[in-house]
Length: 181
Ligand SMILES: C[S@@+](CC[C@H](N)C(=O)[O-])C[C@H]1O[C@@H](n2cnc3c(N)ncnc32)[C@H](O)[C@@H]1O
Image (cartoon, rainbow, N blue to C red; front, side, top):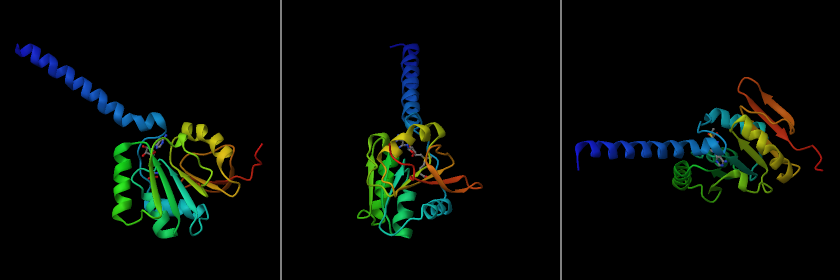
């Protein structure tokens, strides 16, 4: 095999690998939002704005490394379910929950939250994109119980009922007082 042919194959392998890596990391963006963790202080503020009570069930849509789930369970004595589409972040999150001994209170699901049912949620937490919130809103209105609250980091919902906002930190809290049709 000539050296040129080896270089040619090497280049093709390099491009294919680059494409696979790109697709792998852009998958969660295509499905809803890129990875960007929320600070601990902001998570506490978001959960407080949801008026969270002991033993309530919190869903984090796109739970990343599980920080919202961990804070909800440890500092608010809540139960929590996280849904994460990225397999590496899912595994990391699951490992953290196990190591911290929280697996009785926290469950992590690997998948797309658009395919999950939210009817058991008391609180929904999300940090996504505006286009994803827009797409998600009708699902929240259709599935959530009347007492449920939704808190969104940075992006808004237009049809949910705003119950509180922190403009500086861009946190928006909602409830569902809109009657179901
Ligand atoms: C901005 S990060 C927020 C992570 C975490 N909730 C936090 O506040 O620290 C968004 C996360 O949502 C995940 N994600 C995006 N679209 C998703 C989908 N359709 N289903 C499940 N997870 C998704 C991404 O992989 C990413 O980890």
